[in-house]
Length: 195
Length: 187
Image (cartoon, rainbow over all chains, first blue to last red; front, top):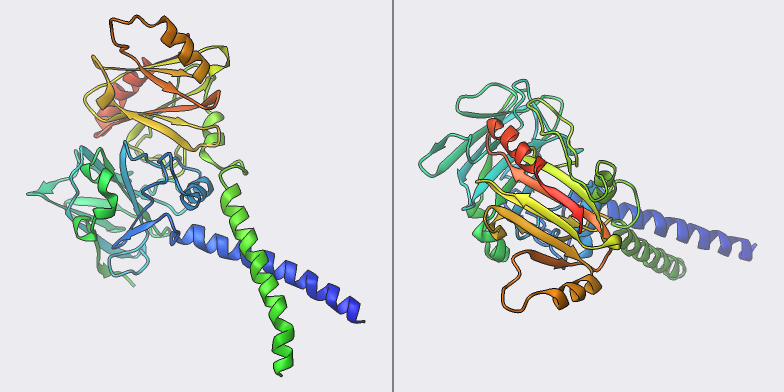
């Protein structure tokens, strides 16, 4: 009886350990709160994912997603699925992505579905580049919304929560990613929601 | 009651220990196992020692060659194999950003070279093994510097990802035709 119960306890320990390990790893890799990630307001950056000395967490995150990380020689890529207040982006809301974009040879801002496909709205647009966005002074203002907006309108579809990617190609920030502060990245501000 | 807690303690410690081992194992093995990583996805679309230009992303298109790829990039790929000799990558560059990224068969970034390294509007790269590099250096003339960018690789095969940035929809065709003139061939 005691022998049987100790075997049972051992199997239960193995199973719960395995389940806990898998669950914890999924949480860590999908949540973006990994050791290799850096947060700047709503933006998440994996500065070493595309470097020769990449850390195991960044490598695992990108292997799971299946994309090729940008290398430090090319620039920096920031991802976000939240607004500046920390709330998850919702397709029923309108967001203002606004600010002075960091210095770079070129930038692109793209909207994705959570699975990594492009989020193309009714107009077919799924992003802006530094060449085709309207710029006022040094400030860029892009409106992310399911409803048509004046100026730089980035359409969303109502049935998908977007993932934003801001890529800076050949930026002087590359070498000093640790010195970057969130004030120099555009804000993602919620300006209204439809019920 | 206390006795119960002490009986539960080794069980909980054991479970946590196993969870830790499982976590470390998954993180370390993730880039090596599974068919979802970038290396496998790209290898399916590429040819060995030849350039394959991927069709530019059209307006309204949702599918991408890789998840979370930048749709403004025009992509050409080549699976290089150094077992027969060094492989030459010659890529003409234009006005906008262009990069050549070398990936291991599992999709890990080995190295990236941008258009800033081009001489006379050509990125001229020679991929070599250590042995091939020694042979070439023995043949190099002493009085003139080598013009090409020689990259020594630890592995015999991998994927070269050549990407040019099209800033406007109208730039996609010119950049695609620029990348179509790229060369990837054994020497």
